[in-house]
Length: 254
Image (cartoon, rainbow, N blue to C red; front, side, top):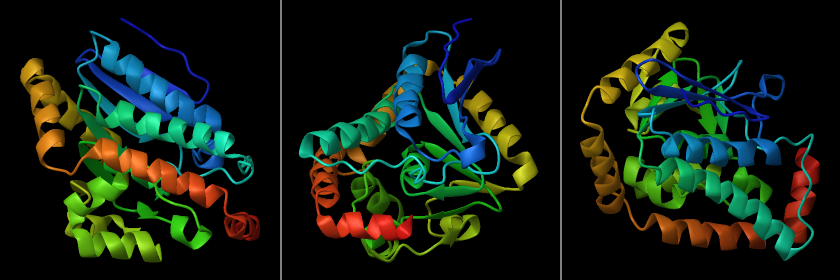
């Protein structure tokens, strides 16, 4: 069995070849700091390169999947180089989840906010606990979304609904996300992890080469150019970080 060690991630592999990658900053509701962002990219790259791993389950320890940026540790980029380094690290995590060969089953618990909501959308099958909630706060802060959601979200919910979600930052229940086609399934909170593992086990029992070809083909044909979306999001997010009005709004939010 191949094992990996991370500062902010728990990674475990079961006998069926299902690797669980769990965000492990429960005291901060798994909010995103630089260590967590880098660890997500490394954990998914490692899992995709691990011959024993067939399917990945992505979840969060504690009361939330991921509550967005950790404002207690937030260091606002002061230069374009600093901003680009941060944003490209965030986009590297999305590339590892989305472009990785192995399907990802999301087990989304509690809050999924901002970048955490983006990671939930990056999953191939997203299963949400019935008490889970999600929203995008970015526009109210003068910053931009990442995670290829400018391509993935309209493909899932339609362009008009995507505009509503991204512009206004409204909060959505798991049931609402199911009804709009973003959540794949909603289950009782107590059954979330077991349901995700059961689905992952079903996927692990299928021919793995065919599974991986299917993921690649669907990503290539069902959504717009993800790489282009990532590049344009990166440029827009950097511009937002360098806007003095953004700094004022983030300080006020903190």
